[in-house]
Amino acid sequence: MSFPLRRSRVLLAGAALGAATLLLFGLRAVRGPAVDVAKVTRTDLLETLVVSGRVLERSKASLGSPVTGTVAEVLFEEGDRVRPGQLLVRLDEAEALASLAEARARLEQVSGSGRRIAGEELRQATLRLEQAERDLERLAALRRDGFVSARDEDDARSARDVAASAVASARERVRAIAAGGADERAARAAVASAAARLEQRRVVAPGPGVVLLRSVEPGDVVAAGKVLLTLALEHETWLLAQPDEKNLPSLRVGQAARATADAFPERPFDAEVISIAPGIDLARGTVDVKLRVPDPPDFLRSDLTLSIELEVGARPRALVVPLASVRDAATEPWVLVVRRGRAVRVPVVLGSRGGAVAEVLRGLEEGELVVREPDRVAAGGRVRARPAPGS
Image 1 (cartoon, helix red, strand yellow):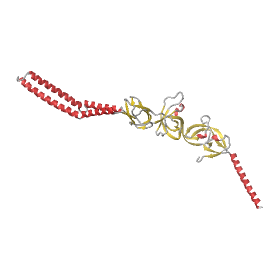
Image 2 (image 1 turned 90 degrees about the vertical axis):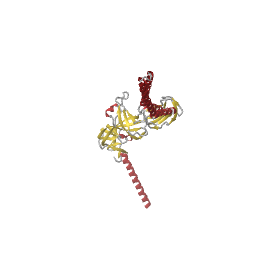
Image 3 (image 1 turned 90 degrees about the horizontal axis):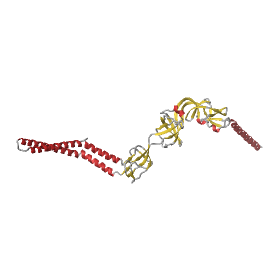
Image 4 (image 1 turned 120 degrees about the horizontal axis):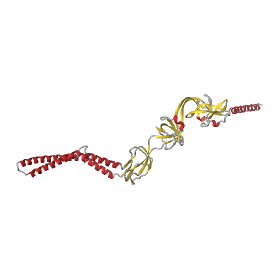
């Protein structure tokens, strides 16, 4: 008799458990599914304006040689990063180097032995003039005493004049060859000219950049002006945003911004407005806004598409909800509010937006609970509010 009794007790316990389970599920069904909610709160809102933008193309430089010659060396490859003044292409320099060596030798001659020779020539010419003047004085005395003819005196006077002219010429030569004189200036100019002709046979980077295109190989005979390579010159990275003209009153130079590339959404970066175009694009009704990127990430490329969030103002103690909880935000915005266990559709009037939240001007009260993902809930249905951790 004990066995049937135990079996009856087990059956009763199982029935009770089943009834409890059915009751629990029934209560949950009546109360509705659990949904994530967010509380409507007040906070200091940083008002932002989100617009599309792109990375502006960098300046390009096409480099060539100003002279015709044979290429001796090509010292770069496509994609290489170059620094200002870096030698990229060198033409044959043999003739230019010889001309420079000759000009330097001439300058050294002028500055060294040339001055010594000119000084010695002046000294010798001065001695000859002194001797000619003594000869003329002696013959003039003899002519007065009748010992020599007038022709002899005239010959001595002519010799004295020739010697005086030689001294004048030697003095002029010394002045010309002296430091800073005409000969030295001419010699230095010849050296500078030869050095410039040598530099014309060397193509160097005008600034920092990246080689985009190489159009030359060693041994090529290149004409003056032929493009040998193309550089993308590096400068500050700039962005271009084109907000609607109605936002013009909210824009100003110096505004902070946050940009995100569509291809790298997990790597946002800072930017700053540096200029606002004085005119409006009539076709699109937009204004060009240029931004500077102080610390550009390595993935930026010319014309890369961006989403740019401009900080246009602040709203203290604004009533806000998560943007994710708002539907039809651009037309007739609404949210689902949990009221008395049901998801009630409530139209709202939005104000400023900042980051992941939007200001609510009308429609909600502080402390109300809005459904975070309204697309997963039927309006009017029963729901159980499940606040997010920390909310």
